[in-house]
Image 1: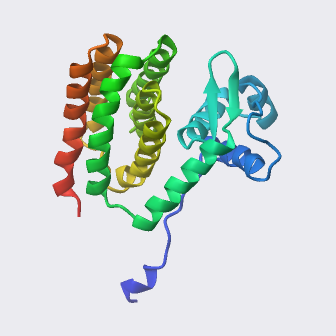
Image 2: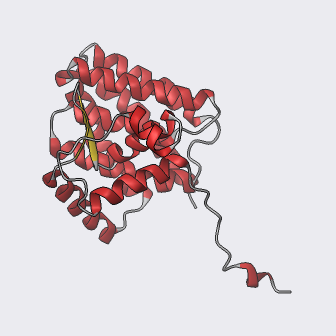
Length: 237
């Protein structure tokens, strides 16, 4: 029997509960049942309604935040992002999908934007921004301790830094670029060889410099962090 007969078989993807939750909430938003500014129920209420653990609800909300679909406001809870946010993300998504950038191109742009973002965050980050960055680092540490890659948690840290710049254009550019990186990260197993452990250490160092308000060291540590991903580029096939 020729081996080619099996070429059309597709990989079986087992959807996680958090993905299913995110899809359901996104459907409510897409259909107009949830509108910009509407507040989502608490984690507790959602977990009871969906009959799942709160950790799955938390993961789903983080995923929706990552893509700019919802946003969490201090002391106000999680709300549906406004139309301006959605329009900007949609426009950027369409533009980059047309270009279909490769890994190296994405990394070159990330390098330019994220080094500057780290310096700007060191200058402008507020206590709530620092708290959000600390939570992102803690979530990555949790995934690493469980032996998982923690790709979304890794990239969320970069988004939190971008948010701390108080520059919406920079925030959305970096948010989309980092979300687009997930496909490459999974495809090429970028977190292999304990790369996620190294990334966690580097995230902590970047965060420390930002907390200290050290603009130059924040930029330098981000440059060093991204450089290892550039080093990875020649290994791609």
